[in-house]
Amino acid sequence: MEKNQKQSNSVFIHLVVVLLLCSSSVSVSERIVPLLQSYEKPIFRSNFQTIYDTSKYGVFHLSNGLAQTPQMGWNSWNFFACNINETVIKETADALISTGLADIGYVYVNIDDCWSKATRDSKGQLVPDPKTFPSGIKALADYIHGKGLKIGIYSDAGAFTCQVRPGSLFHENDDADLFASWGIDYLKYDNCFNLGIPPKKRYPPMRDALNATGRTIFYSLCEWGVDDPALWAGTVGNSWRTTDDINDSWASMTTIADLNDKWAAYAGPGGWNDPDMLEVGNGGMTYEEYRAHFSIWALMKAPLLIGCDVRNLTAETLEILSNKEVIAVNQDPLGVQGRKVYATGKDGCSEVWAGPLSGHRLAVALWNRCSKVATITAPWTAVGLESGIRVSVRDLWQHKVVTTDAVSSFSASVNAHDSHLYILAPATPSYSVQ
Image (cartoon, rainbow, N blue to C red):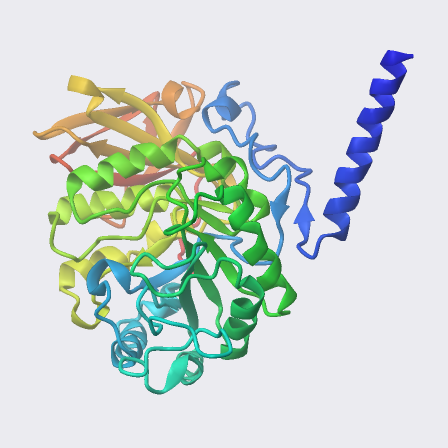
């Protein structure tokens, strides 16, 4: 009788969960087809799906039609911090167009903290700062939409934002309605002044409020990875920060890459791990370090959100940010996050990162985190290829095929703190970039 009672309770609980999911205002989808179902012998080793584990992705995930590939655009914080105004935002939108960055996918223009007044109005509504945004956010959204771009805004799942402007905790419905009325396309939702309430309780109400507006708004959770959001945020948002804030340094960037790598199995179309915005072009790293930063973020299927002043790009910065072949790795429709698969050298500083792409291809990064130039080798056993398979190797920074007949492994000399990024293809592929 006790066993039957437990079975009955189990059936009842499962039915309740299904009914709750079906009745929720947020659509969730169950993944039926594994992402790597067709990646099997004779090309790939039997442990291929273990190396590139995707088993944690999409058992249930938010399905609002967004984030089929990682988001691309610009965010104000890394360069401007609180020194923002509507002129800066307009000029940034203009620069995304004039540089050609918008044409290759950088379409979100995201305003971070400090856009609002320090207090709500008498009706409890958020108000744009009249000194810095005198025309209001709706007019700014219209301007950005007129350029064919999308606009993002910032709020906080707390009593205040990190810069002590009004937060949206307990104001989710009013604020979501306001954002939708302005034409907002993207919300970055931070974690300051959170009153000690667990993130799992604070972030879903804004999901529901955004969904109830009827406007499709990208929902970017920014709870700094404190409660391991990869474990639960797939039903809540389109991306989730897995780390603390990045800063413009080699030490910060590499540390954050390693932290984000832990959660590779949980990401995929509809929901992405977010190791924070790009620092490329802000001056704190070398050209080689920025190239590595961009390569690894692309391979990890991280959001590509520019964090520098795009109104004043150097030729080197534009070269990195506009590399269509590297961007194509990030935006590949298969949507499997690349990860570190092999390391040699002192303290493992010669690294191989890799990830599957559509068309039975592999993206492989040789990342030299050592202090001197190093020859780094990617063995087929480490990247999941059968040892006898012959592949062509295309260098995505040199924009050329460097060999058509690599077998067993591939090696290259890589400068200190640099990264080479390649595509390995067992058959002769088409390399056209859309």
